Length: 117
Length: 111
Image (cartoon, rainbow over all chains, first blue to last red):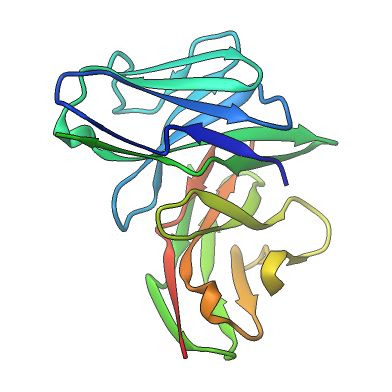
């Protein structure tokens, strides 16, 4: 199947700093990528839909000024957590949509664990 | 609105026994259905998907699922599990990109 990578795999930062997470589709082009957040022992919650060349679409309750998304190319989307606080500590997972022959599938990255001290 | 319900939060089973993980969905439109597996501290790996056609879908690692439109279910099955199948399993539904996930089922395979 298609491969999606994330970088970094984990990051520890001080409260108030910003953290950028990269999501790349390695062997296919993705006009649409998604960002999810997962708390321990819980399911994935969609944060936003990242569209190449246009603004991201955020889910209700997600602060767009805090979670900045940029989808500058067909293989790269970035999520920047601005002025991070301890409550932003979580597991962030991206996915990329592959659309071939009228069939779509989302492929997920390995996730980025963020710990804000 | 769409919703996905996984009926069991935890399923303990002995090695080589069969297992079924249950998933029901609710949607006013036709959707695609997926099962993903998540190992500790990792992202999600696609097990199988139902888009159209045959209602019995075969996936990786010996898993299969059956789409039942009348019961709005998409249960995941494996005839004989291994210790390595211990993981969290997520059922998801969606179309047009956005996926709605169930709460997850923790499969624990014991020797």
